[in-house]
Length: 139
Image (tube, rainbow, N blue to C red; front, side, top):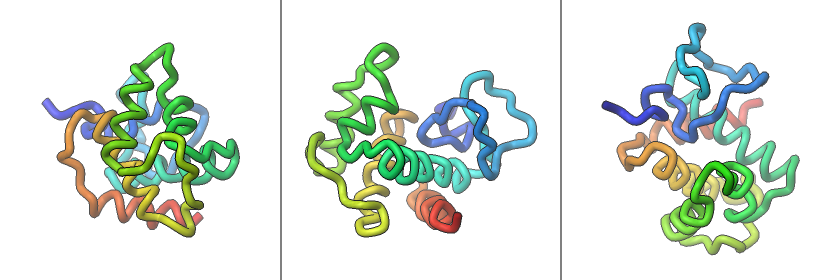
């Protein structure tokens, strides 16, 4: 069986909220997580959250700060998650990140590493991720 994030076209397992994301499936069958029409829309939502909300609005500018909010210790093994993303990207956990507009590949690497943790697989399309990043920039 495919991982939940893949089945839901939601690679970072974004929880349901009052947000009305572009590309949400009309019928939401998962009780906890958003379900998107395509992986591109799931990636779009992920990049909106990471780049606009976390980096720009909340000023979370390190992998440690982002992951601690994304996967809080009361629900996750946050330190292992941080370690995995840092190792996979080659970015130190407490290294200040560049703005997404200046270094988009850094943000794509972080998002892909997070998706690998969330979905438990490396079987994720980089093309869907690139399209999702492009969609996130349009708004």
